[in-house]
Length: 53
View 1 (cartoon, rainbow, N blue to C red):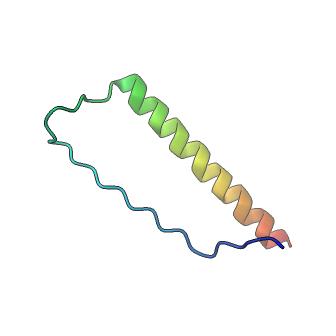
View 2: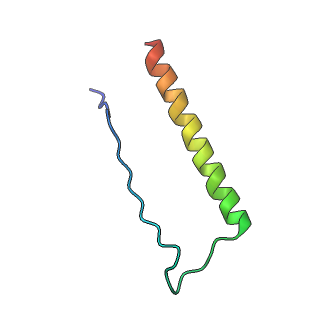
């Protein structure tokens, strides 16, 4: 029996002024943005499939 997820809540706490942490380089930021973009595309694809049913 498949499980249906109706809501998903994601919380992220970001502290830009935290001491002892390293800053992300532009390459890291590009990788993060690419990962976010791919995730959003996958979510849109899933939602479109759900509407087709």
